[in-house]
Structures are given as structure tokens and as C-alpha cells.
Length: 353
Image (cartoon, rainbow, N blue to C red):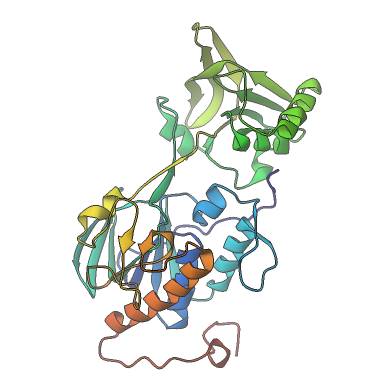
């Protein structure tokens, strides 16, 4: 079952006039820790992510899943790990730009310009790619004006703030664990939940299916099968109805203030393959000692980085972020010597002395 404690993501606070020391593509654990490491070295960073929240796969795919291989943490929920990493870097010069994909790179080490799919120009001395298997984004249902309802806060692809759905009329679309788990988590809190799936059978454990049937009998969940999303109705980005239809073109209008669409996430690395960094289909080869790619000043860390002996663990992403931060520092401060110190001897965080 999903946990529903609220852990808000930071607001986007990108400054187009600023020349960042490091632009970090990817706000998963590796990217967040790399931003902290950059802060420890006195560098500014901008963390960019295609999702509307930080955390990458940890937040998008399994926020309620416990992780057991983080050093000094016998077990920690994925979302709690993400929020701890965010808090760890909160006192440093770290900015965020969310709901953006990095699509074009030009320039050279010390003077890069990164362009997003929305046209923003990001100026940075170095680039660090921490995007896992690629830019994540939701699989959106092909509905007219869906972007308008996304912007209006009526269409969602994940649950970031459970209290938003209290006493609401919710249509949950999807046939897997995410759809069923959130239907159960919000049942009793929402005024009405419609569970829409194009098949009569759902893909989930039998125990979950049994719990859903209990909520159906209580009237807290109504199953709408076999139906699929057809169109959205409302004004000014505020949803009023979700129209669904069957394979026989039977139409139903469901009163709804929110649509939760759980059709999985898509990812790709296509954008960076034209950057001259040696990117392959699903990975970017790097120098194992510096994490630098074929292009000077561009580094790759975490699951996306390919090197001998690679093990895809979060803790390796942390170590790689530390190496890449030191490589980035050498480029951002070419005329200075880096004097490494232990964190216990530094007074970098503002609230410590």
C-alpha cells in the first residue's frame, strides 16, 4: 500500500541570468547527492528533471518501497531517502528546474549552453548527467486538451499530496498495482472513486484484488470495466467529467474533479546521443576515475554511466557523484588548487559552526 505522508518537492527556481558551476540532469538519488557534493566544494548547481517532482524512479515508481542497501540505514522508504537527500543539500546553492527535458547542448567545457524542450537556455560551466536510463515521463492517454487539465491541477500521474483528494470525485485509470493501490489508499477519504480499466481483469496480487472487492461492496470504489478514457470535460483546466467508452461504443459520463492516470512511465536517452559524449542506446561510457564522458566537461553518474565493474546500486551513484563533483570543480576553478577536507572540518552548511 502507498504511504500518504506529504513530502513536497522544491519549487523550480531557475535563474536564466546565472552561470551555474554545474547543471545536473536528473533529480534521482545520484543527482541529489551530487548536488550536495558540489555544494560542499562551494559550487552552485542547477538540478533539472523531466518529472514534476524530485526523486526519479524512487518517487515515480516505488515511493513506498523500503530500500535496504543504503549505508547506515537498515531500511528506509524510497521517498524518505529522497527527502533526506533534499534536506541534506538545502543549505547550499542548489536550484531546481522541474518538468523540463534537456534536449540540446552546445559550447565547451567552462562555457556550455543547455536548452530545454521549453526553450530555456541554461548556462553552466560543466554538465553532469544523472538521468538513470533516460528522461522519465508519464505515458499520457491521448486525450484532447489534457495538458490544460494537467496545468489546472486536475490530471495527475502520481500522488504527491494525498490530502488533495479528500472528499473529491476521482477517476483512477489503469489496471496495475499503482491504480489499485491508490484506489485502496484513497477509498474512504474521497467522496467517490471510479476505477476504470479496459479489461475486466486487473494485474495485481490476489490479496490486493480481494481488498478492492471489499471496498466495492462498501460503495467506496466503483469498477468501470471494460471501459477506457475517451475525453475530458471542464473549464479553465478544472475537470468536471471524464467520459469513458466501451469497445461497443457505449459511453458513460463520470463526475470527476481529478483524474489519476496510471499507464506507466516512458524513458529514453535519445536526446543526449547527439551531444558527442559517446552515448549508447542505454548507457554513457565514462572514464572510471573521473566519470567524464568523451566530451570534456560533461560527466555521467549513476545507472546511466557505463564503466568496468559497474554495479547498479544507489551507493555507487553516490560515489560517482563525488568523483564527478571533483572533476567539475577543476573545470569551474581552473586556476585554483582543490584542497580536500573532511566534512567534519568544514563549516559549509549555514546553520552549523
